[in-house]
Image (cartoon, rainbow, N blue to C red; front, side, top):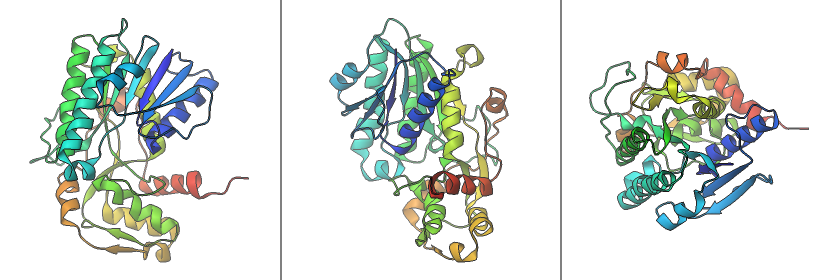
Length: 322
């Protein structure tokens, strides 16, 4: 039995695979499996005999048909053209984010047993005039190409679930901060950069006003919640499979204040303000706070404060190992 992780060579996909393997090693795997297939445009960096890399393009139906077989018990669909890349290349966003998702769903539809299908969506599906606190059933109205493709993906996953072709869970992720490594094409990439770069002694640019509210989650918490989404029985889910995963609301100014508390004023001074209209048009259209009482009641978890999120990054990626 196998689990497929698309985007499996990326940061989040890699951390998710490590978490699944760790839980299997300790006898607490959410589903019985003996292998994981990491699907991406490059090879997975994980060296484990249980992990196989499949390199290819999800917008190719023949490729998706080749990776999904009767051994598949679950599919994590993380792969996507992100917000900045979607804004720059509309056709690529349509091909990967919509056609690729549909191809994967069609391959899953052909299985004798419906696999669990975890689709990572985004708060970018929201837009327009929004309340200060977004309710679980608040309607999507995306203001970006990325948000539109994710909203379409949500409807597809829900419909394939309604028909019994898959057992879907739609996980709307908060902005993940602090990510290690290089910036990616997400418009929200700065939410990691204004913390990560200064902690590494490098200057960084803040492209949005300090009053901008961000809905954030640490990598540790997001991965934990994605594993929980796989564990969750469908009897606990509504007919609409959309879940707003828990985050915390922090303004950009509060993020920088936390950086100064944790790492000192010299580190904070490495961030300078340089507003970017393209980034503001995307990020400032996103909601900054959600009512997540229902998802917390389902057993999902959330970070306590942003100071602790910064300390997690220091512990996981800056503390030397013996």
